[in-house]
Length: 310
Image: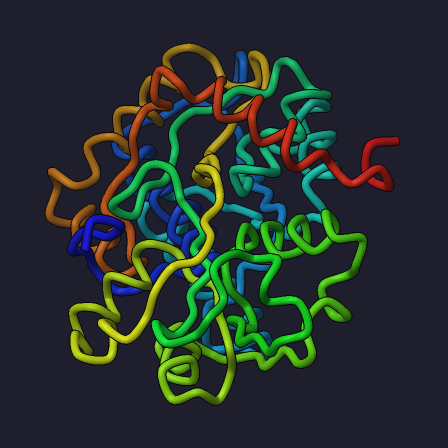
């Protein structure tokens, strides 16, 4: 089918965030590195706009962070603090004040933050096969639905802790109809993984679900017969990928160059390949030539929540 290619297992938002943090530290601090504008830091401060919890659940977040901090200390000799900020705005604000040296944003959050903080800049983007994630709305092939509007009043399966752009797309489509997501659909069933959600669509338990490209390709590879019973009835515009960012001159040119080189060459190193595989990434890349265009389009279609733009 032309709307999909062959790709690897599904990606998860939190796994992406965790992977970026590990790769930034492990691959960029090889040898002797000086942080800050003039002096070496004793502690590296890293911020994330969301939870660092992996797909195992929130109760494991503390132990995961302790393991990560220990790992970074062993590999780099640097003490470090990795903190989840209240939201993307708090993350950007602390970066602008030099309280955080590195920030990890979801792509659409970076689009919002960049509008207010002009000196916030992308160091690299995290990629899982595709540079730009796209959200698909999926129904059973025999379903008469032909677009998102035809799903109003029907049931939906959704990933409980999936990538934020899935929920952003859903909320936006429902808002266009003057409704909230939880009232637009007759029932919303959360799932722990994409495969179960897609199975429910095939089995007629729910009318539709949303999934990204990588998840759909994984399902196509694992269950080709069941995949043929599905169809896409709507899709989002491309979203910006997750972004590893810095602010102004908080990190000097040499340091930024080392960060960038380590990230971009991750797939060429044995240790880097292991990390990418573990966290379901295919690599890090420089922002594409049309990156700014995609950021602008994202802000236009999905304006930042007014409550966070004060």
